[in-house]
Length: 359
Image (cartoon, helix red, strand yellow):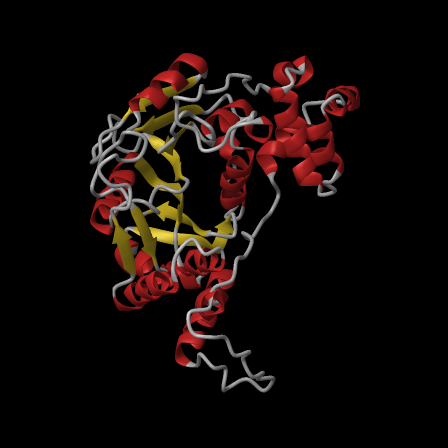
């Protein structure tokens, strides 16, 4: 807890949450406004207690680095290729955000086979076939997980850590390499590892994404890596699936693998996720109530929602859907980890982002 409150931004977030717990109606506020009534069961009743926030730094540094390897003629060539596809042109012209445009130039350039993008950025044009697991397909995903690679960059930049200074890093739960392929293109000097229990996805990645060391991992620790061999690991939407007990075992394994002072970037479902799923009618008000109640009572909620078929053939009763509160993370992980950064809902306005330092 001490490490958390040494960082003023995190202290304000957590203190704000404590204040809402103590005074949910805001009775101590001089500018108190009456809440808008909502009918029973309406999604509005699951209003976010911690609204989505950005990380301390929002630089989209990975995609920016790859984009800046192109010159103006290269960008013009990709724009020319985009103009020949009405669907892609409509998406591109409708976007004014510079970061999104950079993503489109890279992704559409890979999709359209622009040699300038493939040769200069270091991105791969390999696309997993339909039978291989990947979280997104099509033109916008052709370059890999640009959004997630930027998320990892921003999370580390927020605590003034430079990926370029690292020697070895791990994508824990990499599937077919969607995110690590982007980071490996940006930072080829880093020794990148990727692991996942989905054997066909790992086999495809190993055959099609050179320069990354892929391996299949089991449902439980350990991983075949030496103690303290990693400077950093990241896991995007992995602890959002572990049953809490298994999740703690994997946190302990990350503690073994990451050197003292190294970092773990991870995302979890939290209170913002409950609100989002309720608003999108992806979970019923009754189930949302159940999750919120569990988060307040015990800090976690879990259900083995993949069933007998498993998740793309990976059958594990402790791999389903999990929600974790910030208090649970602090209580369970400190003092063996320091929480250096916390951004509620930063991952797609859904999952919370944590940056942990290994003590």
